Image (cartoon, rainbow, N blue to C red; front, side):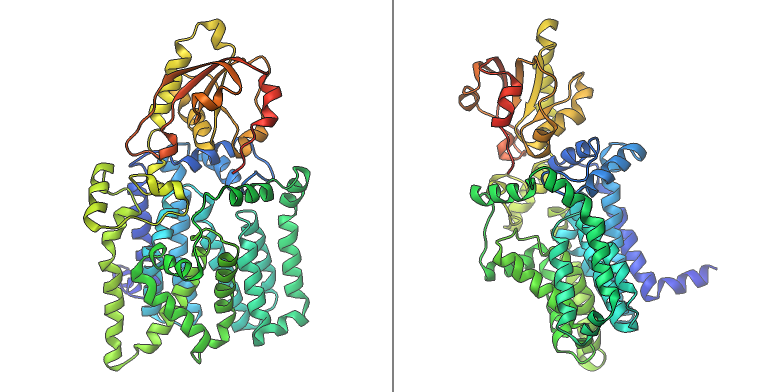
Length: 513
C-alpha cells in the first residue's frame, strides 16, 4: 500500500494534491496571526441579517458567514478556513484544467504551482471574503466549456448555467467573465452550440438562480448602482491606463508567474492544439478590456488568471518537450520558488514591525487599488486588521463611565462597516451590551434601532463635522495605531444634545461609497 501511495504521489494529480495540501497548511498556520479584517467583520454581520442582497454585494457571502458562525464559530481560524479551502480547491482545479487541456504531469504541476504562488490568490484565500470563491467559480466555468468543446456534450451547459448563477450570487463580475466565455464560443467553431437548446437553457438557469437578487435590488431601488456611482464620483480608486493596468497584473499575480500566463494567451490563440480552446482566450481578453474601459479596480481581472496558468503550463510543456528547450521546465519551476521572498507580503508570516523593515529592505510596496491604502505603513490587507481592539476598548470605557440612566439612552454609530462590525464582534469581550449601528453600506439599511437614543458614541468622525448634528460633542479617546488603516486613526466621540432624533437624522447620513 505504501508503494502504491508513493507511486501515486509521483503522478500529475498526486503532485497537484501535494501542492494543494501545502497551500492549505500554510493558510491554516497563519490564519490567526494578526486580527480581523474590516470586511470580515461586516460580512459576519451580514450573516446575522440574511437577505437576498446587500448594498455592496449579492447574498452568498452572508450565507457562508451564517454557516461559519453556526458550525465553526467566529475565531479567526474558523472564519478563514472556508477561504483556505477555496484557495486549495483552486490549486487543484487549475491542475485539473491543465490536464483537461491536454497537459501531462509537468503541465499539471506547473499550473498548480503558479496558482498557489499567485499573490492575489494567496491574499484572498487568507481572508474571509467572496473574492476567495470568485477565481474558483470562474475557473470552474472555463473547465466546463473545455469539457463541452472536447466531448460535444451540450447538456453540460446546464452545469455551466448553475455554476454561473451561483457566481452571480457571489459577485456581479461573474456576468462579465461568463458573458465573455459565451462570446468566445460564438467567435469559435463551437458556436454550433447556439443551434441547440442547451446553451439557452443554461443561460435561463443562471438567470433563474440570480433572479431573487434582481428582485431585491428592484425593491430597494438598485442600491448597488447607486454605490458604484458614488464611488466613481468620489475619485477614491486608483485609475490606471491600459498599459499600467496590464503591468499591474504582473505584480498582482506575482512576477514569477508572468511567463506562464503570457504563454497561456499565446497557446490559446496561436498553438495548433490550443486554438480549439480559443474561447478561453477571448474570455480573458474581453474581460480585461471591459475592466480597463470601465476603469475597474486592478484586481477585478485576477480571477481569470488561473485559466491562463493552466493553458500556459500546457503550452510550456509542449514547447519544452525535448532538446535544450527542456531546460525551460526546471527554470520556470525554480522561478516560482525564487519568488518565495514575496510571501511575507501576502501572508502574516512576520510581525508587523518585521514586515515594515522587510518591505524597506526589498525596496517595494504592494500596489494599492485605492488612494488611501497607499498611506498605510502596511499593505491594506494587513493594515485593516489593526486597531480594532483599541477602538472597541475605548468605546467600552466611554460607555461604562456613564451613569445607568445615560447608558440606557446610548447608541453606537460607526461611519464605516469595519467600525460597526468591530463593536459587534469584539464588544462582548469588553462588556458592551449594545450592538453598533452604522451609516455605511448595509448598516444604514438595517436602520438606527429603537427610538429615544439621544446619546451617541460615534466612530470614524471628527468633532467639527459631527457638530452639525449635535449641540455637545466630546472627544473621549484619541486613536492612533501605528499600523492601522489611516482613516481609522480618528477620535471616539460622544454626542449629547442631538439637534434631531436619530430617526429623523438617519435618512440624511446614508454613506454608500
